[in-house]
Image (cartoon, rainbow, N blue to C red; front, side, top):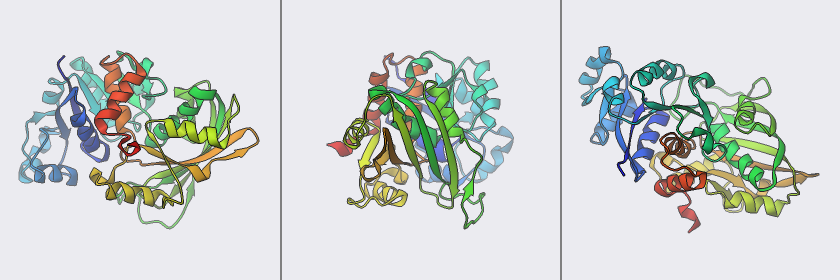
Length: 343
């Protein structure tokens, strides 16, 4: 069977990780990446020897790319005509404009969490609603926080059923290297309920969800506390077993030295993971407590890389590469090397 050809629009924080993720999939081929300017990410791509073909998404600004010595293989429109599916990781709102180009050539496309829900036919998560993405032309992924949150809630829901969840998100304010948020020494509370809770209900409408979000002046990862009301009895031990069995959840503890978000980022770097990326979310054993019949726990969400596996799942669904949810997610995990630490 021929490999599915994939293009990536937007070579930034998510786009460069999507390109790497696709290149690792044994049954996919990365046709190229597209961006508008010689950003640091694009310059780094050139310095690495251009492992991926580069296409300009703004032909009128090609001179800037030429001055930076970026080899150009064509335009975004050229790239779109040579793929089966596009992963659109452009800035919010740009994906909706690019959609017209994808429609012009009848190409499937997958959009990221920053786009409005209306851009896609299906709001998608690899584990929670894989079947809804089968054959769809336009899919939209959940945000990084929502992606990690749904992994944990879906894990418990499939085992014992979950009636409702209440969450508190301690959210990093910007990605490493970003300056547009400014330099702050403050916490900021958003209006409740948080969009992540509402998005969870869109993917899992049978679960009642609400939550509060607090912006924090850090860059390496979010921490979410979850209070879940199960339909069947859970204990600390059974919750730990269920979360620990999920391929994309890593159980950690304070005694091991995982004191918080920075510990996990440092560990990923010590492992030699590119850019310090970690695809799994982490759940602290020490955080699992019972409140009556409710179970409470805390997870770490590595915002730069956590959505990459679900994007690979989305390709598999929309291209009908695998009809079965577990078969598809297991292949994604295998090619990305998820769970190697279990061995």
